[in-house]
Length: 193
Image (tube, rainbow, N blue to C red; front, side):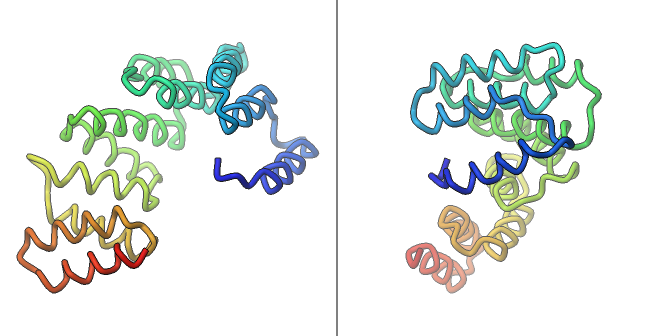
């Protein structure tokens, strides 16, 4: 999605030559089509791949995520629950399903539900800076834990110092805690990006 098509083609070529990685080429074509802005054609391929009898949970989640991008108001909960019930739920599958549900709840402003699902995702192994940032945003709201939010944001900026959103959110919390000098440093870090 960032335009690194040569790198993507190299990875796909390596995967195509491997017997250990089965590839549904519809998913690859859908990814390329979506990257080129052909959302309807991409969505049709994602859905076709996800409906195959031997479709893996990853293909189903790709179709769900594509639909969320194309239809931002669509509620993925029922589809995610079907994935969770239909497949043998590995920790990776549970983490990814939890992330989708956490994102949806966060977008809907359902912060307690978002915190719950995002914490499940993190405890299941998805603990990258993007997930920590989402959890911190959910923690800032009513009923959240601002100390946990601050800790998560500090971890995010230590891992990804170029994340302006994390610096801004951290500055807001530092200001709320009365640490104006730290808030200023955070805002300056954000501006420098």
